[in-house]
Length: 151
Image (cartoon, rainbow, N blue to C red):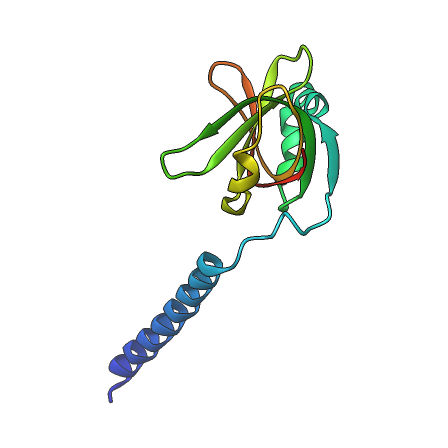
């Protein structure tokens, strides 16, 4: 092999090795199991009003505090709405008293039997992951992968 050919060969081998490493890391992250928020200890315990007030006071700081790092949030409130998606998954909207927003909690599939018994006006505690606040019509904190702790 000539010098130029040999150099190209080494560059190609290095490129393929880097591609394999990057592909392996991407596959690992994609297939990595999600944190089980139901069995993890709560990093923060709040009522619905307290969580909304934190986001209203300083959204950037609340995101840093509650969203980054897969924190487990335990939140309690009054059921304002229970909805079932066409796929059969449940979401619960929590409020507390006179407050300017709500908390939307997407429940895990294993919570379906318990979610079917939820009624508007009842008290509920859920544990899950906060993904932040959205403001379409009114302020809404989004919680995903939630499990019912107490109803």
